[in-house]
Length: 116
Image (cartoon, rainbow, N blue to C red; front, side, top):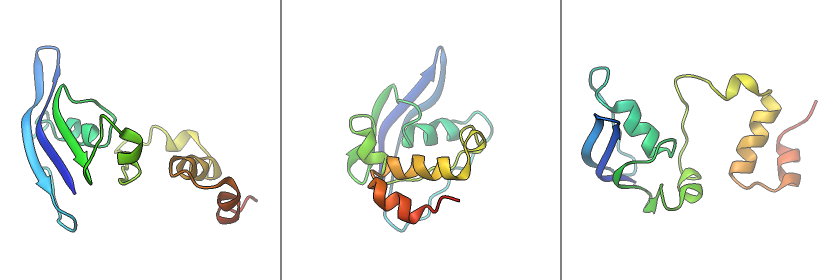
């Protein structure tokens, strides 16, 4: 479940997201539609913890992404439109990063990530 309650974000005098509230139930398909500059990407970046809202709350399965980002981020996945991290890592390095994010045991990681 994802729930946003009165979430706002501004950049100087520009209000990108203005008190948005919605809830996405488990199994529900949800989409953002709107013109460029409508706040879609800003909202998604706040939902995954890449930006902090100026006000409001974002809950991921009941966990506040701002107050407990590590727990919340373990429950979601995010693939950005620009691969700012992926192109700088080898495949093995990327899998190690993901394993560490999910607090996998190093021994278990080594058995699941075969090193050539």
